[in-house]
Image (cartoon, rainbow, N blue to C red):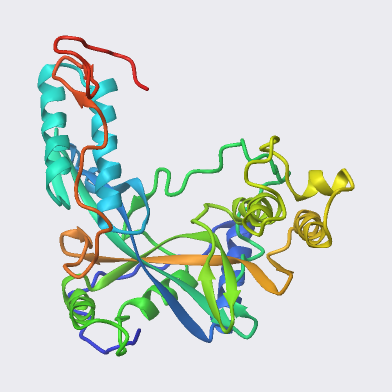
Length: 375
């Protein structure tokens, strides 16, 4: 990606405020250190989610009510995944929250469109929904890809139980490009405003769309940092997990990979073993582990004991990566999918058919046989 110079006439002003309290002051100092260490920005590609704006309330309540808020986390790998999530969100709203048949009918009409069209924006019952696009990137410094910062959120008592639900991504996130930000946040936003794809590895339509976005959506918002596991593959790095709200949840995923998944992938533990919970730790504790399996158990124990962000096991480096997300903003709000963005699949029916009375009809059931229970 590259910078370009352009008049700032069409851009929103960035309001700067001082850090509030000692905790935010330390976070600001941490962010400044990270900015000074940055040597390169590594772009992974776009992510998609859904934002909503209450246009009906905005007419009565003023600007504050018109703020966009994230209703589907901005983590999907293609626009259609975000559309599918919006489809489910509206279907469940029709099933559980509709006050009457008229409301349910409006919601189901939107669901029907999402089942058959690539819809990136629609308005239902006074709420405007838009599929939004963000760029995932990470910084690289003298020590390589950025790891979690000391001030990133961590649980006071780490819980390694995989059955415990992790913190939600983008829960309650309001997108407000006019909200005051700290000096380092302002500097990073300014530095990212004119970023665009460059290089022969990108198709021409991708380059054109990226350049066009600088004009149509000249401002940027920086979404909360997320975390994923990456693995070193020769001189390159590849993603080895999904995105998580905290570094600890990424470590928990790595712990599972080292003890359960990798041993099965490598044939150290059979996939069809009777005890599905058997892993490197339990087999090692029974005294039946090979040297390789014991090495995986030791690495996972080290990960837990040290809260490590980087572990090397049998020649492979596993690291917790601090992923950042940049969302472009224009006069009409957040950027949506670009024409060059690729979908993994077409629109399709996601949920069973729901009628105006709230009755669910499952495929293959006999005529007139209704079932109000989900699978």
